[in-house]
Image (cartoon, rainbow, N blue to C red):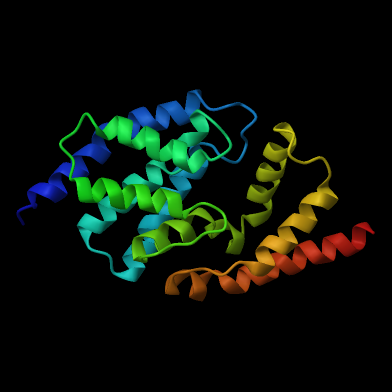
Amino acid sequence: MRIKPKMNRILNFYDDVLDDICNKLLHELNPSYKYHTLRHTLDVIETSVCIAQAEGLYDDEMNVLKIAALFHDTGYLFQRTNHEQASVHFFNRVVSNYDFPLEEKERIASCIMATSIPQKPGNNLEKILCDADLDYLGRDDFNVISDLLFEELVSCGQMKFKSEWDKVQIEFISAHQYHTEYNRRHRMVKLHENLQSIRNAQKLAK
């Protein structure tokens, strides 16, 4: 099958920059970041692909999504506040060296910005990336990942006590709704179980 020129340029860009971006996330992030790490980015890429396949995305959309997932937290290399905007700025700087379709640049930037909390995705690509970013809320490894995020918040001076963290999580998870049919079907039951587990632990701690 012949690959369309635009699709080929997008795929080549992802392949060209993947190792460099991963190395930056591995070696240049603030060591206080225990959650926003290369591991999280790789998880979001893998999960995005999984959701996208279930949602029936075409290959060209899949490649756009993978780039957005790769860059979505690169802003943490430069700043913590408004990191999504910094991620878009960094992506635009990197992609400026490539023959890359303007329309796809804008779609990728929009996907990255959609991951801002509270999430407000406007199309299917954005919905998939947003769900991949918070996929862990409805998974068996929730407690491990949640502990890493709490450790990061403590290290960055944004939180002190586990009781405070439990309260934040209960409020956040109670209000959370996944955006894709795949995640609503495969993650909501476990999400509610994780939520109840936090509530139970909070009661025992009192």
